[in-house]
Amino acid sequence: MNRYGLIGRQISYSFSKKLHEAISQQFNLRLSYDILDCDTELDVINKVQELRQQKYHGYNVTIPYKEFIMRYCDELTSEAKAIGAVNTVYLEDGKVIGDNTDYYGFLKLLNLYHINPKGQVSYILGSGGAAKAVHYALKSLGAKSVVVSRDKERIKDKFDLVTGYDTLDVVTKIDILINTTPIGTHPKTDQMPVHKKIAHKTNIAIDLIYNPKETLLMKEASFGIGGIYMLIGQALKAQSIWQRRPLDESKETFDVLMEAIS
Image (cartoon, rainbow, N blue to C red; front, side, top):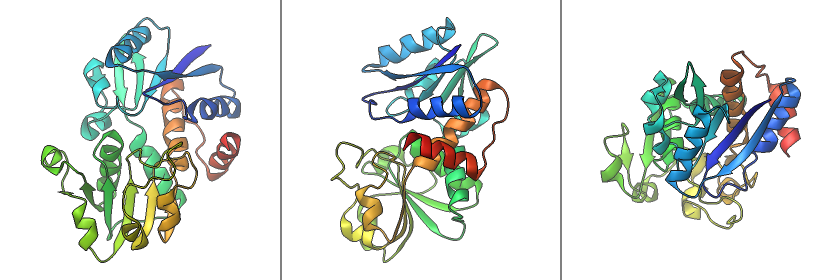
């Protein structure tokens, strides 16, 4: 039985174990999946070593290690290189491969909600690994996106368009607002990454947080979408990479998996 796991910090809230076990059941896969809470970067390095020793057969990676783990991969896929972040890791011919399926999960989310961002301006809150994947996905669709950061000088070379949070105060309407920060995640569900007045002038708020299912940002915007479809999409893609075969990604499969982790 192959072992997989999620690498991150303070991730006991994660649905990933339940999700990958549901995928296993759905597709008759023999696997186990662990939540691997890594307090330090040294813990992450040790997990990479366990992958090399085949104690584990693949990892997903989340906050705050999506960029850090790149330096311990032997090779990066073209997607991981272009995005500048890794969320999926596996061993191939003795080499640790860093991949990214987050962008794919975000594209599935847009598709399942019938959202076409082309011709609209999307504001991305945050500048970490998830933000990079969302930026890459939107760019692949020919859509315009602006990354919103409290440290725009530091990241201005990493994205096409960067601005500060003060810009959101002066724009009259926000087409799409995408939260890639952890603000609002359980148990701090009373928090929101922007002021209510900004949420109120947002047409579509996509919050990549999936616990809780409905964040405060989603409630305050005209229309709110949570990150559960993205979570499922990136997990299915990761498993298809690990299993070396395509897995069904129909709406029916997404609905079955969503029900399983509800």
